[in-house]
Length: 337
Image (cartoon, rainbow, N blue to C red; front, side, top):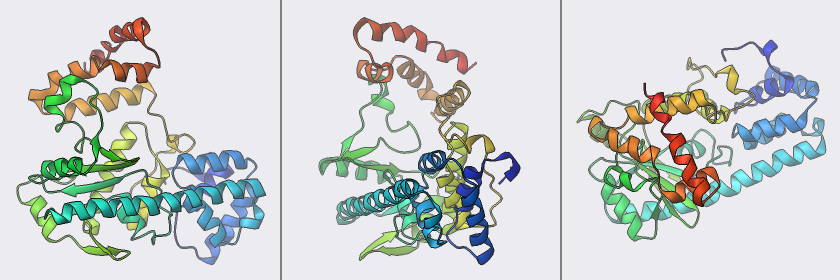
């Protein structure tokens, strides 16, 4: 960490002390002392949930034998968070197995990324790595084929923000448009941000990708070093956009405890700051930079004048009130200057 514990509340110090999987006797004693210093357990449980590590916090408090030191309602919130995470991870794993079957039957090899890999490797398949969806990597020349194949099997693409995006939908973001089925979401990547996109890099990654078993199903994952580079890049992109969770930080540090990555102190008490203008500006500039120059004008036009359904959802209004918000969006052009 790049901050001193003197600048933190006892709740924040305790949360940081639980961002690990192994404890020695001194670390257990320290955690016990931090528990006794906490005065606002509502703040602690809220913070654990917002940082995406409520399951890990619950597990480690029990592992350190400290559950009796917590108020009953606070421990109940943590345990409920852990059960939810374990249940959801089990459900996500089963849904991924369907995707795996569809792609494998078509001869399309894919590599698991991020949460699903970490849950079933460093976190030990215990529901400790909270997840919302699944990310997979396909070879660039097979990504669209896999994306279309999943659609033919009932997976629906997310609606486009603007009709202008239709011709560039595969150029937006770091993955193809997300696909969903019965509440399950899968994102297909064809490149790895942070990894040089040379002609030989991706085939080489697929050639040397290790294999693991998730239950009785074989899965392909990235080599540890490459996954670490990808996760660090992912962490920095989220930070620049104002969304910086201890969940992402812990992933990286658990892969390599000697990593020099630091967690920005300003996000400790509030990991979700993407609503602030400074972060919205940076996220918008980054999105424009990541679009090929020949598509940028179309992207900017579509972003400033999105579809009516998106405007209704974004501004929670309709009719004339919705139309009045369109002129305000032109101000985003100033963010690019």
